[in-house]
Amino acid sequence: MGSFIHIQQFGRRTEVFTDLTSTYLNMGLSLLSNGQRHLQFGKKVLIQNSGQLTTLGNIYACPELTFKFSPASLSGEFAMVAMQNDMLQTHLTRDAFGTRSLYYYFENNLLLASSEINLILAALPVKPQPSLEKINEYFRLDSDDDEIGIHTFFQKIFRVLPGQICSFGKDGLEINYFWNPDIRFTESTNNLINYARNTIIKNVKSRVNRDSKIAAHLSGGLDSSSVVCILDQFAGQKANCIYFDSGLSSGNEIAYAKLVSQSKTGNLTKVHSENHQDVLQQIISISACPDPMVVPSLIFWPIYEQMIKAKKNILFSGQGGDSIMGFGAEYLDNLWNERKTKESIEALKYIYENRNKKSVSFNQFCLDFLFQKLKSGYYWRVTTTMINSGNLIFEFPFWLLKKIKRKQKGPGKAPLFIRAYKYLQFQKNPNFPEIKGGKNLENFVKNNRLALPIQAMENLNALDNHFEVRTTYPFLSKELLEINASIPVEVNFANGNYRGILRQVMKNILPEEIRLRTDKANFADYAYQTTVQLIQESDFKSDENHQVWQYIDKKSFKYALQVLENPNFTIQQKSDYTHLCYRTLNLAIWLDIYYS
Image (cartoon, rainbow, N blue to C red; front, side, top):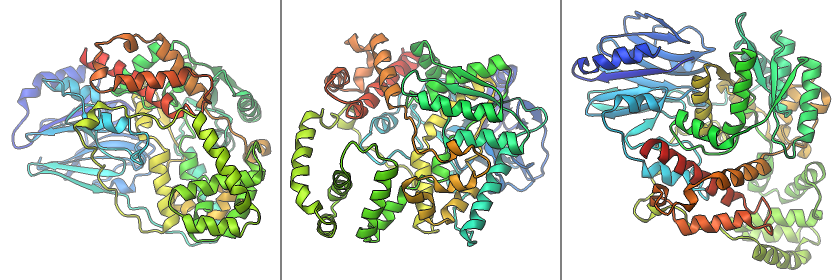
């Protein structure tokens, strides 16, 4: 736990940083430079004389580092600097899921690397300008570029990507990846389920010791409930459970959370968010970036505050469970890609019966699915599917007419928002290594990179440092992902119930009411209500000269506000506009903090 700063000038000593050295050390931070070599575990600084490498790490739940620099062997959450003793090369790396942050500035053989952007800014004589590349990326809601990118919101300050090794030397920067996911498990499905079960239990237990003062974020869902139950049953720890109450459609969730806490821990504290504007400003100031989404940052702030009141130092979170364990919807995509149209309709029937609210008929439900495939260019296959599926072909014209009328009532596609598009082409992220373990593994890894928002994780890491606690994620495991990707996709589909692997893994651990539940509240209403409240309380929208309008088209923003205020549109129809307005507000706050 804790923050660190690494400063190194290749080719010469760093006497110029003498004053900075004492400043940072007085702040309780570790500084690694040409004259100092430390290994940091928590806040305790240890001298490491390895002969070949010196390592500074922000490490938790990892085996002891050996003299051989091998991040692939580490199973926990880490960000580290490893420096060769001849000073010719320095390596930056972070865990494969990006749970610990690591940023760098590298120019004219000067390397600044830190777990916090603010520490790099403090070491630079001049603050970098805002990064147009990152601002573009931040507002591209209609793209598939949700994978974490190298850009931060400051020019020339970049992030180490999850699973990456950035090697710096006098010849420049070389980038490699230490984790190439692979299908290594060829056992029966039952054995793989047992492996997954044992791995999750091991991951939870390895994060607990006699000095742990544990809290757990308990939402009532499958993932968070699983972590709490494993802590109780296998680690002998009754975590102080904290439930965030959105104040909206969370009635069922609190009932499920109470069921788990009463049977496994005996305690549950309910918290809610107040003073959204003040909290958001603090989060942006601490993380040095505009917040990407209302959840999880704003809901975790009161959870951290409750931890401090309860004097707990480790927060267990089920975040990432649905991406690492798999959701199950990929089974339907596989059937479609394999041209198994009859089986696709049968799978849709399972989903309709088990998960759909049945506000439309089954035929309409199928036509909605086929329409998405039609937009993707599958004209002939959609046509043959409708022909081979009874009366779908006859209902299609009437369904299409209703679809057109519904679309006319909607707000339309979100308008172009970013002025920077006019003079800057968006740059693609560096390619991740090719995945060779088959389509199933590729889907699992892709879902992790897209469904697990790394920038949100980095915000939580910044809050960890601020509150001096640690959030840990037992589901985020390379081995667990590879095991689950080895299990046939129909197991996770679970006849339309989804999450089948985790449901089997947690048999006799989770209460049956939780294990078999298929309903789950989402935070769409909360995100919308919070965004509207924040916008109403903010002054930037009426300030004609606010610097945010250098980057955001003001007419487009005003139109988005009109959509948010229009009662004729559903919250779902307003979704993109909610995101755009929230992110504009965040960008305005970030500019006020760092460039006012």
